[in-house]
Structures are given as structure tokens and as C-alpha cells.
Image (cartoon, rainbow, N blue to C red; front, side, top):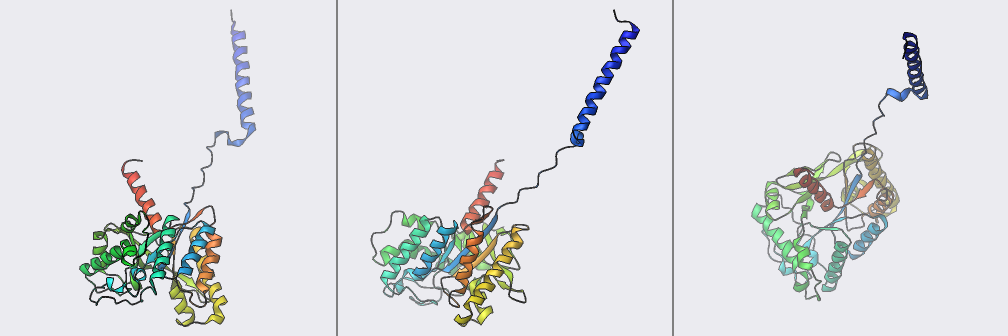
Length: 344
């Protein structure tokens, strides 16, 4: 039977044990009662989108594909369909308001050249690159109607789909026509757009347009079913003046559109520095996609391609960077929206 003394003694000893236990735990570290520190938010990967307009010269097809293989990049090639027509087949194309066989940028030099270009297009597509439309004859369509644009889009699809048959080139690869029907992207010649173009694009089945220009890297909005990308203006040169991030605009900035091969090294370095600064700003900041545009032309003795290869060789290989095509980007965004809409 517990006496008052023994009960009090037991309670005292119990209190000392509890007090000792709490003191011991407190001595282990002052974090006993503190919640764990919140983990830093994980940044999305930095996206870089590199594209080529017209996609004409065979050596540049091969050079760009080799760059992609070295760096793991995927590009968008905006194809002008007149380069799938030879001098003998140029009459297959009639631009809005023009007579048959007219083009601002000419046609392929020969049937053999068409065959080689078709081979490169097929190889690029099989390697995961995006083949998109740059229309056909590189005419300025700012004053075209919706019907004019639909005619131009129909010419592009028909010529791409039937390129092997039109030029008498055999055999036509299996699945070629399905591939031709699957083109979903567009960039307007001269980046010249208008209301009629944006009415025609969804009617023709396109999903994105890359004809815009923005003050800096910008997230592309989707308007009327069309995701609208813009080439950004980036700081360039000793005075950090803005210039559109495309090789032709840099060519005009550096040499007024005239060849100055003796300064190719300087121009390449200036271009690389501008690309890298624009990239670093996003990479260290909000990670808005960075877009860069090129042509299949070696302006200023290849200065801009040399800068591209240096830039891509450094950034596209980073674990937290993705150099992807416009189509890749659109598919991911739309896939995410579909998943969110069903509560995924």
C-alpha cells in the first residue's frame, strides 16, 4: 500500500525523469521544435529554340544536322517549297497574284539537287527535327487576303506531298505523304504578317507561327488556336544596342549587308557574346525560352554559323538546358494543358 510519502516520492522521481529527458532532447540541438527549412523551388529547364529559314543549301543541311548530333539539339527548318521544284517543274507553283513559275528566291538548280534536298529533309525528320513552312516563293504577304494565304498554304502542302512524283524521283519513301500532311508550323517571309494570315493559319491546320518580334525573350501566347512565337531583340555590340536575334539582322548591323570577310572573326565573337549574354540572363533568371534564327547562308564568311556552333556546343549540352524545336515546345505545352484539364 502506497503511503502519502511513498506516493510523493514516486511522483518526484517521475518528474525528475521527465525533466531530464526534455533537457537531454533540448541539448541535442535547438532545432527540436523548429520545422525543417523549405526546399528551394526547382527551376524549369532553360529552353533554347534554334531555327533555319528557307533550308536550301545541302552543305548547310549536313552541317546543321551534325551540330545537332554533337549537342543533342533538335531544330526547326522553315522550308521554302520552291526549292523542291527544278527549272523543268517550276511551273507547278503559282503565287497569289503572279503568273506560274515566279519566285523571289529562285528555284532548285536541278532535279538532282531536289533529290538531295528531299533526302536531307527525310533524314532530319527521322532524327527528330521539325520541318515547318516558310511558304513557297518568299513573297511579302502583308496585303494578301485570307484566300491568298490559303492558296499559298495549299501550294506548299501539294508540292511537299508530291515532290517525288512532280520531279520524277523514285522511289518515294514510305510514309512521305503522311509526313507532308503533318506540317504544323509557319514563319512568314520577311516576318511580314497581318490579320488575314492569322485567320488563314488555323483554317489550314497550323498550330504555331514564328513570325513575331519582341523586345526581349517572351513566353508565346496562344491566340485563336495558334501559338505565336517571337524572335527577341537582344543587346549586341560595344554600345549594347538591341538587334533581332537572327543572323541576317546581325549581318546588316555589322556590315550593312555587304560581305566583310576580313572581320568575320570579330563579327562571330560579337554574335556569340550577344547570344551568351541573352542566354545567361534567362538561365540565371526567369528561364523564359530563348529563340535564335538563322538562314542557310554563310554571311560574312560564316561568322554567324560559327557563333551558333560555339554557343550551342556550350549550352545545349547542359543538363538543365533543352535545345528543342518549336513543335516540341507546342506539343509539351498542349500536352500539359490536356493533362490539367482532366485533373492529371
